[in-house]
Amino acid sequence: MLSAGIAVAALGTGCLAFAGAAQADPQPVTFQLKDLVLQPGESDRPLSPGSVFGIADGTWVFAVSAKPLTDAGASLQLPAGVSVHVNTRYESSPCAPVAGTAGVYTCDATPPNIFSSPLIDVADTVPDGTVAYYGVAFVPKGGSVTDAVAKVKTAGSGPAGGPASEGAAKVTVETREHVARNTVKVTAPDLPAGKSVTQQVTVHAVDPGKLQLHFNSAEGQPTWPYFPTPIGVKVTEATASPAGSCNHVTSELNSPTTIIWCDLPAGDTTVSYTLAAQPELVSWKVDVRAEYQILTWGAGNPEAHGAFAFLGTTPAPTITPTPTPTPTDPATSPAPTSPAPSATGTPTSTPTPTPTGSPAATTSAPVVTGTTGNTTGTTTSGTLASTGVDGLAPVVGGGLALVAGGAATLAALRRRRGSHS
Image 1 (cartoon, rainbow, N blue to C red):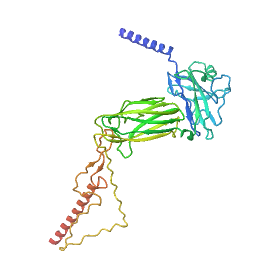
Image 2: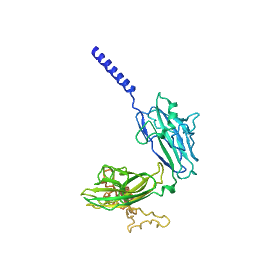
Image 3: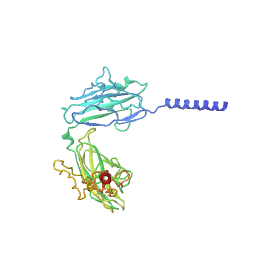
């Protein structure tokens, strides 16, 4: 027992020493900022870094100005119609303006809430091309926020690029008319089974941006089988010329994500990508959507669609439409008539007619026809072969016939008993 106690004590001491060593040498916090593109009328857009590396436990310091942040002694002012605020409408904000220093804000960062930042608004009247500049510095817990306030005003003087403990970026205002000057065109030839084909997207870019390509089943086709069920087509290559860079997923074309994405500069660019099909391929009509992302938030980015086909070895699946029953108008339906009495005076047993649109009571179980896509890619959900309004019609029709026949039999028995008494 003593040995066990000593072992536990040693283990506990080791854990404490390890924890102490980890706290003595924390990973420095670095981050990356990104340029933002907003439209007139946007509001409450955060200025937080896009990526943070390390444990951000401390204080963010932000500076926002109408001019590049390169002069520590400059007065920070915003362009007309652009404003910055801290969000206090719904809860207490971790951010606050720095007293005595216009255009500078601090925000507390405590894991896991490490992306707190002031918010920027753009009025409807702000003209196209208006630019604001913002800088960010991080101060770990125990560091000097005062020094960071002076330092962030020159954040634009440092080199741009990789992660750093301080950095600068800009906010550009672009109208819808400006964004629409960027154009996209898709050229998508068909893809035969067992072959490869090169398709292209041409981009006329007034602004640098990111091209994203998505593939899906074309309108009128069943939904694609859900990933990871294979469909037999992958992207093998994607390039941009004369400038730009592209990447693509290595999984099948039905992956629920962006399949190809390219960072493109301003100018005219052609993005070429190759699709390769397996020898066994289901015929399919495909829609490719190319979106050139310029705006940081919201809709309005230019996009284009292209349609092409998998020329497969298996016929394309079809969708069998479900027939819609025709409603009956009571005002025009003939009134039911009672059956005429028989010659012997005994009423004739007349079974209740099967309701219109319902199968007879002896109709076999409905047969499912047609196929549509689902998680397995080969479901048997479709249209019932029965012409009934719903699955209950055979049961209801048979029940009514049984009840009517039983009632007639009882009535006949009572009359026979009366004739013998």
